[in-house]
Length: 276
Image 1 (tube, rainbow, N blue to C red):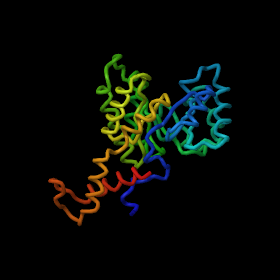
Image 2: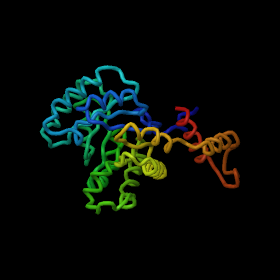
Image 3: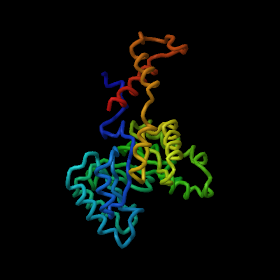
Image 4: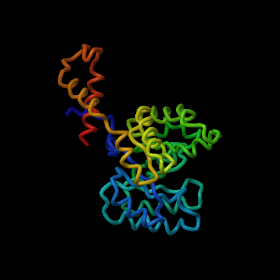
């Protein structure tokens, strides 16, 4: 298949990954469950999920966890710039076998480049503030991908509790736009309710409609629902196959609609990602 039919830049290996499972690096049971899960990526968290008194132990546990092989890529989320743990986290990630670093509350490309320089790892940036959203177009080219931090973002925007996802739609679409313009992957934020399969599935499906490549998760039970939501349907795959086979060039009629080269390229991307 011609490279022009693929996403603009998949050197980071993130296109086609749907589920990013976050878990506290300080919880050995959660780490063991994640290793055996079907997640497309695991993110060992040193930040929000870890209490201050457990930061050092979590940092050591994350480095130890990634020292052995995993069936999926593993990233480590460091504590934010300005925190007392940030530099220590970066040094630990640099000496570890983690494949990616994840930076919370990203607000500038300068910050991302600094983390990449110290750790020697590609960086996923979390867009979690109004400033981060407005700088997303600058940040994205310095990253391997963007992650929407919807909980922090809602708080930073001072949204009322239970205001719903619609209040975040503009911010979420700006994150996707920034990622697409830079040719990197974009991942939706977490769904907070653990025992609501219908709600989780609906939000993941909405994320796909917004253009996200996948979703960040907080429990292994959400993985299958995420994969289901971000997988193309059989009807989509069938139409894509027929379109690629039938297309002869230029603008032409297909299934009652006018199609052209860009529609065929989109169909090829869909088939390529399904094959992965």
